[in-house]
Length: 135
Image (spheres, rainbow, N blue to C red):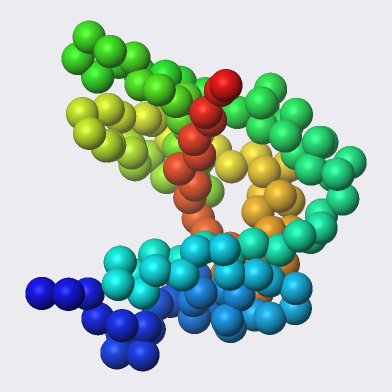
């Protein structure tokens, strides 16, 4: 059976009706709009300064505990980290891999809060599955 349309079953993520470009306006653009697959992607140009983005990127590269486990004989094509808030001891599992929780440090929570404000998300997420693809 085909997926329901947005009007039949609206998408909601972190309390925001999606796609964000439709619900938030304010400079958002819809880059992917595939109603049949319920796949949507919105972006907003210049939401943050290049200097701020560079600072965040450097912090993420150097201060996150990235791991790149093997699946069978092959190493994953990406590094990842499972960041959680509070005293979460939950392990993230996916396709035969697992990541132990790392605390969301104050600098990471600052990034999360800034992104939430731009996206109109009122409640900060309590976890983040972060992926790093190196070229």
